[in-house]
Image 1 (tube, rainbow, N blue to C red):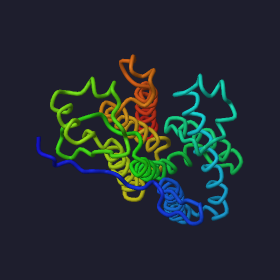
Image 2 (image 1 turned 45 degrees about the vertical axis):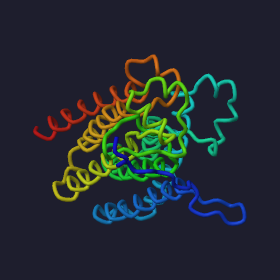
Image 3 (image 1 turned 180 degrees about the horizontal axis):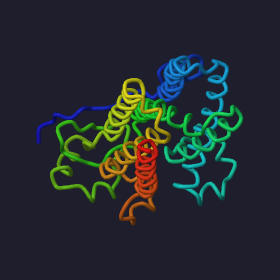
Length: 283
């Protein structure tokens, strides 16, 4: 077996000054809000919305993303632990953010925002999905820098060897003979770079939504862009999950993992929104 794989062993900390660490994940998470803000500046200017409204939106989005993603992880993936240790929910340094929870948090926070600013709910969500797709790119890149949410073992030529992720006996026992031989020789195994797959998928969705909004005036069709976002993003997620390693133990007995089960109703809702939007605009 030729060793053509990419060895991946980055330091999750970009820099550390006197014990204060700046992590790549945190920088990329902040970058998602920064570039999202720039995109929305252009949208608000184009549609003559006061700049102060954008500042309010940023606060609502930040709260919705962080609270929703954290609670989503705690309640969808590790409910037993967090019900037994509720104060650990506040321990963000422990890690654990779920994109499905973030989606719910965003939708709820935007509902409150739209009511306060007297904007149509469809107007705001159809535009926010552009920056949410962009955020997915940054967050999955952050996961890559943390060597987390890794892919399943594989021998494809573009596989990554995550040096910081050990191979335990259970994983070793389920490897193919070729991969067991590779492990015996090199002490680790190649895996699908699932974070890269997702990052590229979200980037393509973001580019498509930007084109539809600025070139095809898709924002004039209520909930069309929202529905398209749901179908594409969570459709990609449904497929890519087949190439991911198991995140939590209880998923080992499921025909589909938790991320896939949560994606299915969102995809179906997206299809409904697309057809409903097209039907209304044709009248």
